[in-house]
Image (cartoon, rainbow, N blue to C red; front, side, top):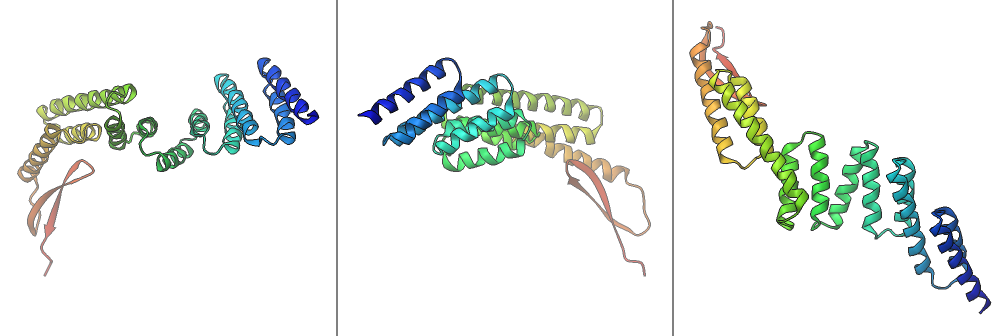
Length: 246
């Protein structure tokens, strides 16, 4: 009976400190209740939540390192709580530690491959590093899982608009005879919208134009047997094949 009263006393003190936003004192009193009570899990869950609240307050104040520490502590108390882990990812992003973000997001997707929010989070990371095609693929995955996902739809529209703008620029370059820049622009458009048949056809036509142009303007070289036009990273170059010297 006496132990039960002590536990209740510490729990009530913890709640009082929580009302004052004194998170550390609240957790300290819950630890005392935890040490006396047989209902351990209940107090672990409550401590983790209070530490999470502390982290969220720090995050809102842009104290990201301390917020990351709080979210990490909350995750250690409740490893199965995905919310705490994802707040750690948000802190890492705010701290520009994007490679760590990728690692954690990939780990989350390994455990929860049906979560569209995770695909959008990774898509944004890809977009930050200008990996447009990978960004597009993750957005597609999110939309397949949740067709009306608002953030996924907005990100997809941004990719498609970027692709259309690059296509228009490619057409202008081609009309002016600037074949190299036209190829670069249409390739950028395809990176942002990989399955648009019109973009693929346009790029193929530019390869043909590039090939024809090179064949018409290639200088006569001694021993020149043939000439080919190949694409290397969206650049059209001609390569002579010389007969062996006797």
